[in-house]
Image (tube, rainbow, N blue to C red; front, side, top):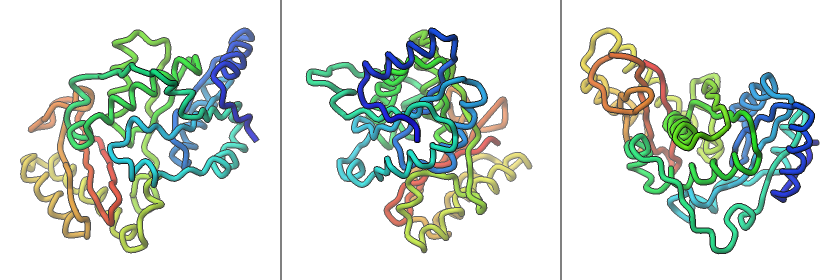
Length: 279
């Protein structure tokens, strides 16, 4: 089993020893409840780096509701078992007081690209996310960090954070891992009822259909309205957004001019699902 470290000083001593030997260090930041999507990030890190750290920390500062924080699955023992065959060197699972000690008073905010989409529907979420990510980069002293493209906006926000603050870590975005029926893998999928799980792939299907329509010349607003209607007709309770945006700056676009992404968030059975695709 990978070594589980909870103390920052202990982790830094371990990493210092690795770096003294010339080893590159990769980190995969997670909130636990690991699935194949996370494991694919670990495999990518193992290709690039001699040493790999997986962080498991359910970050209270990126939840908008206390209920969501309490419901988030905590499965450290099962997570460690999943990581054991992959050659992970350390699981860093700090207690909350190690990350946010008494008197903690610093918040990082990445403006602009954090404002729309998730930022509009989850106020403060990205501030909490980038603050803890910056702390994890500092604690692990990683050379490279690995994030999934399923959280596309998050990936762009982290890239902006690293560029703006000249952080000495290279960010690698890895492809979204999907179930056989197209549903993007997520720790939240386990909260879906059997009925909701059967309907959930309709989100990705509708996005693919809309993307094909746009590439075929359909006006973007019409394609987006059709996708929203299709998702609701499939049994979703609400579509928070389904939009076409520029891939990096996440600006609204009305035609295919440069790299673009379609991003969506929708509720089904009390579970919030997000997805995105290149168009």
